[in-house]
Image (cartoon, rainbow, N blue to C red; front, side, top):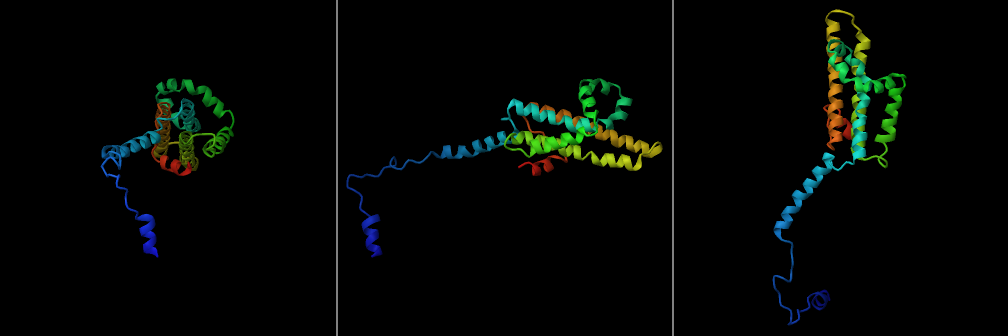
Length: 206
């Protein structure tokens, strides 16, 4: 019975007027098939590079890198004392520094705002903004370690003081470079990936 069904339903003879030609079966040209892969890869790279970020997203992402710098600007006291030229460079940021330092709770409140209102709010902010915000937050959290080091030892002279000055100056320069690099990259529509913090930020942003 199965053989009769196959012969009657599926294996019907072709009509005499049918003639097979290569035009009957139209397939895409192999060259077109080969070109689809690179186009997809290029589109993926463009998406990951942040080149499609809107100007408001770029500005907001760039502004987030002010947070760790304002929270750790005190680590530059030795640099600012030895090189007054840095004081001139920081003059435009003085109003923001004073506002941030006006209350000891400002840093914590800003942390809560950035984390819960921005990073954990994918419906209102793009991943581009949330990733850069998370990088700034992780960078600020890492400031706990030099703070604990300073509070634990608190040297006043000798080699220990020289070591503390070196650590504080290194932290300050790292924050300054992160601010310049992160903000500039965001304004240009690129994705800055800071050492140490980028992988942690990737894991937190869905």
